[in-house]
Structure formats: structure tokens, C-alpha cells
Image (cartoon, rainbow, N blue to C red; front, side, top):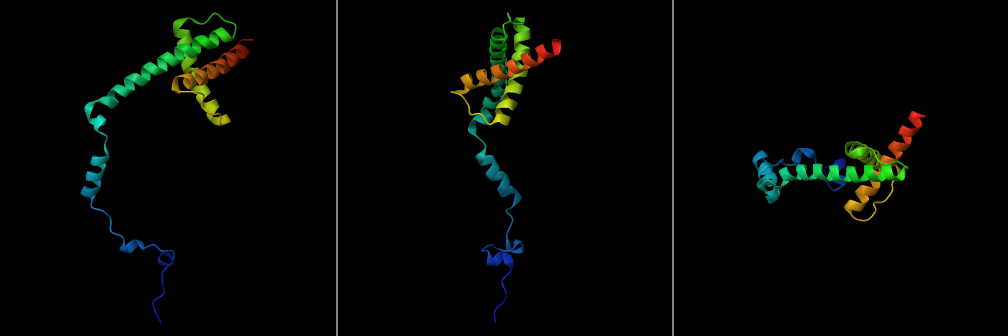
Length: 130
């Protein structure tokens, strides 16, 4: 009679006691090799500035569009920007909850989603004001 196989061995795996863990320096070298070259040249530090600029542009456009659609003349530069940025958060959340697909490329999708969120925000604000 032979030895009985453990449940792990019956499924084709090896028991945990027989696995060798890689040396910590080997893992560190593998992680170092997988780091993109662009990360070491300051490209990702510029990404934060670009994304802030995108947020401001999309927020301004979405706030202005929402102000025009809701039969208003807008709220000024700062007001449109704030409405658009808050609307972007609301629109992104709403888009995810309703499982709606993206529309077109990044810019069109971001502007449409942010405008929808800004419209919802303006609708709620007008209900509160009454």
C-alpha cells in the first residue's frame, strides 16, 4: 500500500510546506525591472498637473452647459466651474450606478457625464430653493 495523498496533492497542487518562497532581493529586482522608464524621467509628476487642468476645463464646460440647459444665464466663471466639478462627481457616480456605457472618446464622454451630473445638481438645488 502506498501513502495517501493529501487533498492538495489530489488536486494537482503541492503542499504549502514544499513551496519555496523567493528571496526578498529577487522580488525587489523584479519590481525594479517592471517600473516603466517614463516614471524615472518625471513624466508621472507632470501627469498630476495635466489631470488638474483637464478637471478644470471639463468642469467649466459642463457647468456652463448645465447653466444654459436649465434656462439660466450661467453662474459666472467660478460658479460654473464649481457646479461642473461637483457635477462630474455626481455624474460619474450616477453613470456607474446605472451601468451606462461610455460615449465617444474621453473628452466627449467626460463632458457629457459631467454635464448630466451638473444638471442633476442644479435640479436638486432648485428644488431646495423653492
